[in-house]
Length: 151
Image 1: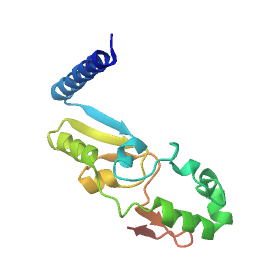
Image 2 (image 1 turned 30 degrees about the vertical axis):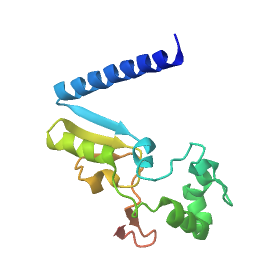
Image 3 (image 1 turned 90 degrees about the horizontal axis):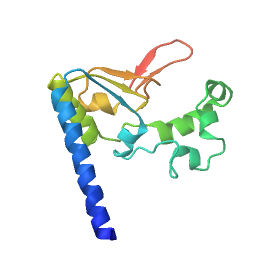
Image 4 (image 1 turned 45 degrees about the vertical axis):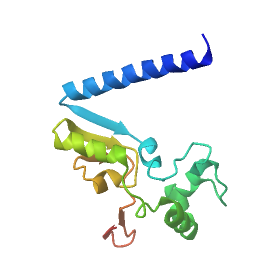
């Protein structure tokens, strides 16, 4: 089989898979979406592990160390510098995936979103039932008085 036929065969198989996926969604009324960095990278937010991700960029300290509680306590200036530069998601907008999930929620098909993302883009798009496994950069609190600070 030549390359052109092989490519068209793969495209046909992919289209069949997409059609099947659409049918499953159409026939379902109790969907829970589990997501992570792949959803927000489309909005321009870097992930952690890809070749351009935060773990592969050069910093004074490794990102996984900077994001630890111990590092926060011991090096608050470095922590906040990294947090402001790399974790601030206020400048980003929801993408097509976020909006399609809102559509499914409004059709009463999607019951909840479970996400590893901390950017708040699901809520910004209009999703109501979002479980954030790692919290959110949009909700912070003072470590002295415990006052909650919302962005």
